[in-house]
Length: 95
Length: 334
Image 1 (tube, chains in turn yellow, blue):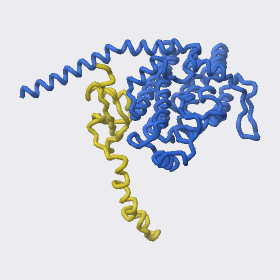
Image 2: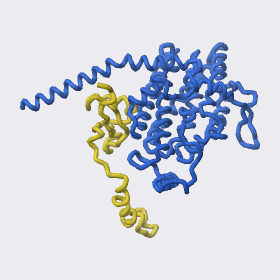
Image 3: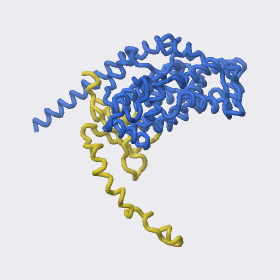
Image 4: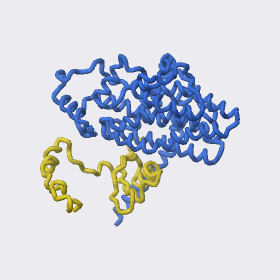
């Protein structure tokens, strides 16, 4: 079996205690155990993480680019969902 | 620059009115500084150019381990050895980030490695020069990584998302490379013997011009460069990047107390830049064509390393297959 058939895993790293795991890249590996080992070598050479997740890339369901408008255009208009929308006097503007 | 003379397959730039509706929408996104992502529509030529450029960049990182690997067992102190090993490991990592970015364009890693091993794909001309003395480790870190950083800092804004993200990661890591290289030279110049100081100047003499060639040929009459700039794959032209590199490097050269092997190098108060001499492009094209001092040796070593690793890949695969079969049997039994 050639390495061309080795599955791809997406790599997520938790940078500091309390923050979510964040996508950092991907690795090829024969299985999840070796994917974790490869990810450790590749993505944590400088204390980047305290925890690693690897997920088979084909297990991820993603939104399609052509749905971009339908999914994401509506909140753009809803600026009242942001604190900066509400103008307050300077004395209380730290709120 | 780690990618030189990337062919875009384009003879002349298309006018907007000659473009399909898809292409026009694509160019509007590029103009808007939106990043193009793997699932987005893109012109075939854009995709092919990216594969060429990103894989060439990746191959350069991988082959780039060899000139430094040459001095790993002969580093003067354990500290220098650890630093050099860390830098070489980074180069390998950078190659992996870039192969991953190329793979998002639908090309397999095996395919890319195959193109490198058969000589079909190129890597930067700079790695076909030998590293002859310890000062070369300093000169490579300072000049070669320095030139790469100038290019890569700008490439962080490249239009293709995965390439841009790989560049951001690489730039974060690479500044240490240049500083450790410069520190090697500075230590030799400040504390070294006369012979060691001569070694530094000799290393600079040999790496100066090849480092300037890393940015690729002059801008005039390069359709490839113009197309890559229009697509915002490249953000600055070869000559602009080369000038940036020279302007930032000459003051560092002066702090070392060394000179460049270029009698025409001098500050031009009118332009606010350094003037410099003509590059020997016949040497550049000769190295690109495969006739540099080390082309053959670099490729042979890479192919051999890949072949010698076959049993490791086979063993990993056999173990994983066995584990999976074991897990399947257990499931059936329960």
